[in-house]
Length: 278
Image (cartoon, rainbow, N blue to C red; front, side, top):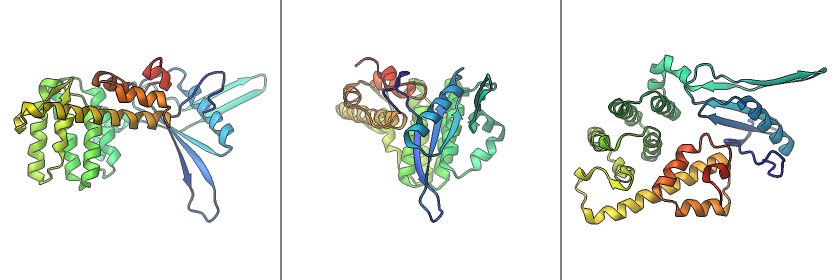
């Protein structure tokens, strides 16, 4: 948004153009901002996005803040000032993910795919013990299989949940064995892609599936390519169309850098700050 502004580039997390169901043509911008950690200037930044977007496009802008942190007191929903008779009050709707914890059963029973994503985010933030994280991750994925989603939805959700709830490498084999058992029970042999998800720092997890050493290199390359595709997708969602230099960096990055970038994308202020000097 307005890259030539004095305060530098500003990137909205997600900006969507939608049309109403009425007979005449109209459109509105819906701005969704996901915030992973408390930030003192968050409300002011929301206002900055609001007025820049409205100035650039000249249409109504509806902003929504999704707060994914675990701080109960961090609930920004307005920015205002009043000086010498000149006043401004800007309000925006806010959704705090930890509020869903008090109604966990509703998340478990919801058919909305994003209920699983919210559950995964809450467990990733709250549960630190490795075994407990594995059990929570398995429980969420088991729900995924029970909801009648398509194969493509299951594969995409599995990758998102697997990325959000990281496990110690020592538990990956047990996790994959459990997933394979769920698939056999449900007659849904979808997550053979877990073989490529199960790479941790260049080591292949789940050798019990009968893979031989001669195939390890190919699988590692497949995992690396998957990580690059994931990084590209997340960065494009956050920052929009990527410049050539950013695409080039991602295409040459190793697993360590790709993992760091995908973990940091939620809270990064700019593409330059996330990827570093180019």
